[in-house]
Length: 253
Image 1 (cartoon, one colour):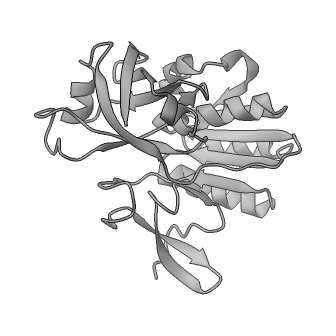
Image 2: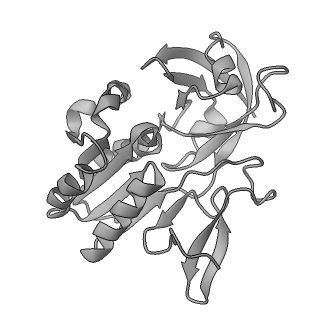
């Protein structure tokens, strides 16, 4: 399908927020899902491969937003896109977050650009009556919080680094009914361990390099625990969201 770029806005020196118009996608998107964008010819090495990007926010009617970190030639080329540009997009893809119908207290844990898939989730949780508390790390990247559309409705704490994060997380878990996290794998493992120790439901949005985005190339497989034992599942198709107890951070099948 085709999405039309409405506008883009620099959030930090290396992070840009893009707003697109695409009713077909916006009406289907769920928190935690992602899209695959096609680059134009010559826009970076491997421009024939689409770029997988988490859905940052969505109005449910026409518009969706992507928060993109410039890390290579492809994402660098995107910073030059002008309003009105039409982009070939696949999506929404993957399995997103789920949460109980009865509202309570939810803790979101975002590490750097891992904030991206948690933002639309925060919107939906707030709309259904949840109290949403965000733990963001590292503090030196807190400029990213300026992109949050409902920042004033969130209870936000920042951790200086990965050493401080588990200390603050322990405090926040004391009143948490569920937890959702996205960020570096070391951070996700810490969140998984802490929540399982307290028997608090937790979902992790896993990050992997993806080529096809639809489960064909097998390049994004991770080790997952099932009733039959350890196996591999694909982040793009079986995820990117997994229950904390499913993810095997060290053991392999």
